[in-house]
Length: 223
Image (cartoon, rainbow, N blue to C red):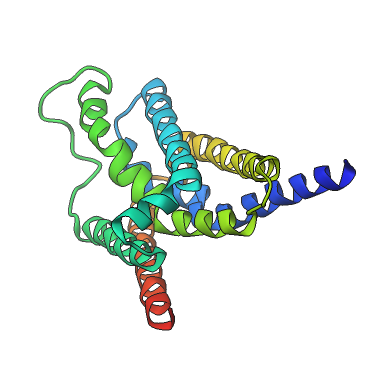
């Protein structure tokens, strides 16, 4: 019994440690914070709650079904890495080359956050959740973890996957916490520093996408 508990906790820890750097809830929160500009606190919480649920859904779907979906379409993990990396590069480049200023007022008066939230709804899944929060890197890690914890018995399979689900849940809770409070950190830095951070984060988004894409190309060559 003790052995099973120890193994369960080891998988929970392994899943959390493997997912944390690729999801990077702290860094990603700073990257996507500009999407939430103009939202009230309650609407920000509402939007972030949806993002966390979307992220949870992507991870759970990938863990249980993703492998068969890839086989159905004849895709490989390196191709997913390459495609996801290109998408992230595109987003980072758009942020880098954007001349939008956060200081210009809205020309038409709106209710508190009404316009911004309605415009943001279509972006909560793409690109904020996928690929910026849970993208190709997360999918690749989940495929690896799933293969790593395979068991011959059904009870062992379910127990190991339950441990990974706890890891996923913990990551999604961190996504919620950091995404909700990222604005406070940036405001504490000041408006000038906020612009610097936004540009830096945009550059990092581009670099992360490039790294994922290069990793996909490398895996394709060596595969």
